[in-house]
Every structure is written in C-alpha cells, then in structure tokens.
Image (cartoon, rainbow, N blue to C red; front, side, top):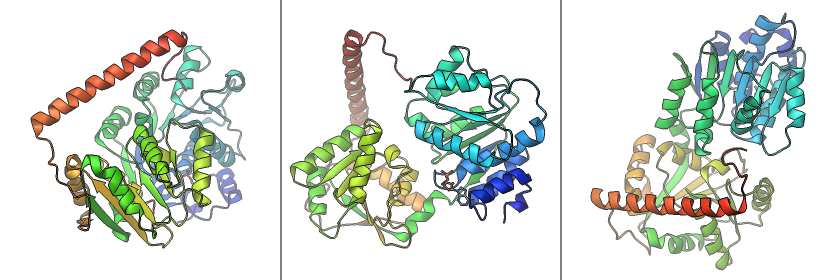
Length: 422
Ligand code: AMP
C-alpha cells in the first residue's frame, strides 16, 4: 500500500514525501482509513511503530476537509493528551511536519516551565492542541483553554498515563469534552484497567493492533531460574559471573528496587546504572549513553523508563522479577535479539511469582526452560490465601504510614506544594 492509496490530500502527500516516508507503516495502513471514516479507534501499538502519524495524518485530513473555511479566531478542534513532555514535543513536531502545506496550527503545552509562551500561543489560536494532563487542567482552570469545540480527541500511551497516576486528571479532562466527538485511544499494553478506561472514552471502537504481543517471544531463547525472594541478589551475582553476558538490560518492577539492585551490584564492582521515573532526564540520558558506550554492564530499568529506548544489538535481558502482566514480559524480552541478533532472556522467579510464570507460558504458548544448575533453588512455598491477605494488609499499612510521614514532612517544608501537576 502507498500513501496515495489512502486518498489523502495533496498537501499531506507532499509533506509525507518531504519526510522521506516511502509507504505507510502497518499501524498507519490499518488506522488511517478507519480514522478517515470517522470511527473511534482502540490502537494497541508502541512508540516506534509510526503511531503518531497514524492519528495525526487523518486528523489533519479531517481538518482540511471540514474546517478550511473557518472564520474568526482558531478554535481547538483536536486535542491530543500524552503523558510526558518529550512525547508532547515529538507529537507537536509531527503535526507541524505533516501540516506544513496547510494553514493548520498546533501548539504544545506541558508542565515544569513558565506558562507565558504557552498561553501566548493559545491566545493567538490553534486547531490542534497537544498537552500533558496536569498543565492542560491548570490552563483550563485559569480560563486559557476551552475544550467545547473539540471534535477529534486522542489519548496517547494510555497505559503509561495510568502508571504515572494520571487517572483522575484524565477523567476530569474527558468530562469537559463534547459528547459528540471522534476518539482515538492508544496504548502499548491492554491490561484490564486500560480496557475499562477505553470503554469510558470510545464508542463502538474498531481495534487496531500491530504484531500481536505474543509473537516476538518465539525468536528469543528464554530461561528461568526458580529461587526464593531473599536469594535473588546472590543468584543475580551468580548469573553475572558468566562473562558471556557482556551487557544486560535488567528489569525491576519498582524504582526503589532498581536503585537497590544498582547499589548492590556496585558494591561488588559491577558497573551498573538505573533509569526510572524518579531520575532526571539528564541522569537517564547519561545512564543510557554509558550503557551504549560500554561503560555500564548492567542497565537496570523499570518498564516505563525502558519503553521507547532503543538499544542496538542487545543480547541479554534479565527479569529480576516476573511482571504480573504477561504482555509486559513479552515487551521486556522483545528488547533483545533485535535486527537478527540472537536474544537471550533470563528470568528469576520467587514462589509468589510462580503463577505469573504460568500466565506468561499460557500467553506465549510455550514452556520456559528451567535452569537446574542453580545454587539458590526455590525451597520456600508460595503463601496460602490467608497468609497472602495478611501480607497485603501489612503492606498497605506500611504504605499508608510511609505516605503519612512524607505528607507530614512536606507539609512542614513546602507549604504551597501541589501533588500530581507536572
Ligand atoms: P512513532 O511511533 O510515531 O514515534 O514514529 C517512529 C518514527 O517513525 C518517527 O521517527 C517517524 O518519523 C517515523 N515514521 C513514521 N511513519 C513512517 C513511515 N511511514 N515511514 C518511515 N518512517 C516513518
């Protein structure tokens, strides 16, 4: 299929040609015709698949067809909400590139910077607004933005949005959108909470998926160590004694866990660095560069932070813990063995994670080979239902205690601090 086959306006075809795109990517081929027909779309696709153009191009086409004769101040006709400043900027650049031969204007708003330039751009009027949730709500509250004319709404990277705690912001934004609109919803993974959110936004959506997530797993050699919770650290050192593992991307479920792993490895003189949401953009970029340049052997990442980073010729991935969404496992191991290289994934499973491994094996339709030569085998048993309940209760109590203490501290040192705005 070519872009011409998609029956796009000449202005768009020319702009796409300027970008050097020869043909639509899979997600574009599937999504663009649906969006052009005015249908709601539930897209399961990651960054890197060309998904931005998959929504931006048909939205621009709608704007050219339906709104070229608009008189007076430009109104926000299309809203794209995305979790991070980097993504927002990237999406804005895409709109600018594809709409360069049209009169359509866009602007990007995100938190963490003074609002003046953003409010100036809004005052002069745009048809396309790309925003992160916190700043969008702030500027709506201040009366700089009205969503009453939005006809095309995009929620991008929905899973990441929920992971970042934006659910309430998203609901507030949706409540302000006109009921009659076209909505597009993109997410890399589709766990239950995402599907349920999509049902609140979309009407009779068409599903668009790029390469079903279970497919990458077939090309990667996968191994499993069964161990106990308290022996994972030692087991990791045992695994890393294998000098064939020159470099490895290691996944940790939590940011806290990632930092602890890095500390422990450094104590043993194993060069490592962490990338996760609590680290600044500079720290993350430095860690990634050190890894790519070979100065760091073990790059420890959380799932969110690892998404979107591209590491060429990565051979090994270690799952320090087993993700409780089977799809996440497939995304993780899909980070190695790219571009025809051999990929090897090693997972470390404690008793409580045995059921997660079973779910993964069901999804990928294969058994993961268990390594029997293991100095730290699994000897503990998984908790029974009552033990688990008590454990969860205690965990919840500790969490509440932690947040209460933090609130107390923040209350005394930062009187004007507001949570959740970025
Ligand atoms: P995205 O998934 O939207 O972040 O896009 C990933 C990259 O693919 C971006 O650098 C786009 O410019 C590029 N891209 C998007 N569509 C195409 C296409 N049809 N052909 C070649 N590159 C593309």
